[in-house]
Image (cartoon, rainbow, N blue to C red):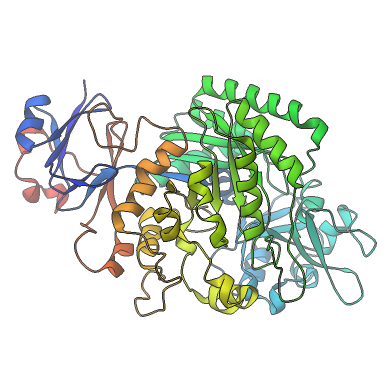
Length: 554
């Protein structure tokens, strides 16, 4: 028997702060919540850990994350913090020189549009540093690609190649491909690039999971499982990682292919259901399908009802009839739908499909991730349709990209419709949260800090994004804990109550005390995962009451 007592800080039970001093754990389950004396009675002689004033909360669950991408890019060239075009090119040159196989592709990602003139990196710049082998690099949002001439030639892309229905080939004045590929156009190159094996990816997924757990995240949803673009299907890698001892509670969402047709919906849904049943047996639940409806604002691929200043309207990947059909069929088969919707037109399309499908079966939780621009008329429809808000709250602030790129594309009115978390909560919507890592940080406390202040962490004097759209701290913390665990189907965790799984996140401070602007600087001091303390010193029964004198904690 393993026994543990967590004490020494305020207790947040997944909804609110409660008058408790300690949480008692036995064999991975919470068996007592109350006074320290009562906890010691329930689990006599248990090891004790002292929160040292930090809030004791249920563990976080990340409702939209890409550990597979983290693992993939660990094998490749990372540009995430390069900071400039010149630095990107230096890294790419060095990475190419390090490859033993002279024919190997140079892969990776993390470049940002603002580092390049016009936001579109060129094939000529890549050709200058890697002329003799193919290069394909995804941007920081993983919605665009940067290819050199060799990669474009292998994919057969030239001035005569039409744009795919779900993407765009950026072209020069002469009509030749310029090197930047948007959305589905990335797949034109990605499908001719070799994929790494599941065995090569599995260790990276385990390492990424361990990093999430160190941040207090013990459950998550891998947001896209299929081979698309330049991204492989990570399902088999997850199975290998689980067999090798992956910790935490992973779930996954199976990708809805963009070439799906009406006559293939039934076969697709049957395949999703079969994969879900098989995954259940391995501990990797995949009773969710990922439906991506549009792109992103900054590349003008998000679907906007009234379009962009240049007259374009973005991309809609599926017709309304197919979206309604596949949502209804998936729900009827007991499969939830996880929607990517950035623009207001995509949000409306998703809500229309949920409304047409009717009440989802018990346990099926449809949700919309990102929902950057939401028409106010659609706000009450989340509660009406039962659609959960899957928020990536870190983006809900007026950072440099928001001020210089996004807001000019949206205009004043639609800029005020962005990430309306406060309005959605007041309208009765259920909230969950996720990070979209590696697109942004996986640390929940940074996102919670933005959700509460609507300001970038560390920029306390900035103008907040959207008056009245901030969340109370208790609501934001509940969304990232109990809300997200419930959304991904992990009802055993996410609460501090007797009978719940002993997955806890202990913060390095009490964020309910002090200025709201300080919340984003909170960090997870240590985690309890399935009753096991991660990254903390455990005090034995003999050391009770003198944690501050313990040399390991000095």
